[in-house]
Image 1 (cartoon, helix red, strand yellow):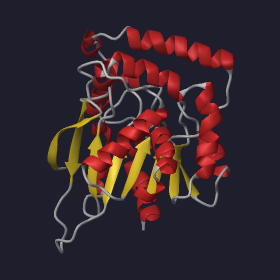
Image 2: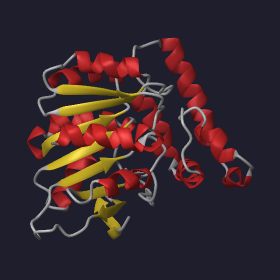
Image 3: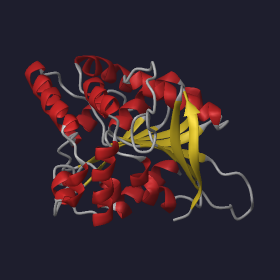
Image 4: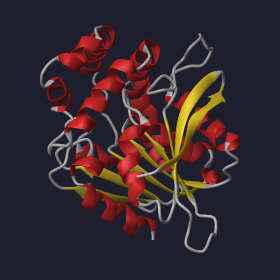
Length: 283
């Protein structure tokens, strides 16, 4: 893998970290661009292996969403943490890089942002891939408990977690069905510990909320851009059944692939099957 360029660009007062993974084409013609969007508590770096596998056909732009990874909120900004706010950040990112039309691959909470973006600016998208996403059913008691536990998880984060033996494995246990390389598990724990408190906490509330339950089915139903939704068969975070429900709302424009024996990170747990799925869709 070669990161050809990396740096930070200012989006609404926050310096956003980005990476370009690309290589010259055989005929020196411009290649289409694919933008990768990570999920809650993560960063763009878990997309590097996927990007590297398609770099011969696409120039790949990876970035850390506001408040996550290396896109730190160094000063207070008057921007919300709703899914729509992050979709606006993405639109400004494309404008800043003068990207008129792209492909994108978004994961988990990032895929919720991507779904909003598909209807915010459909003219900017060739095709979209939504990885591990779907429709939640509202349960006031369960949502309240989730928010309470999530608040504690975000509040009590300490750097010494990284020194605890097998901390990375324990942290990732609920997310995975198949093991991933240890350095990647450590990276996930590092990203979780690095996330801004306000971003990490408030995106829990915006992603798993009564509003999201009401809005997201409408957003899936409105999609007009060719879209692929990929679920992990054993995903405990966003079960595959939720993905199937989302696709059922718009079978004309959303295709569906369920990858066996994978959890919430099928692109890392079964890279070969995942790549076959996205390459078949992108043809």
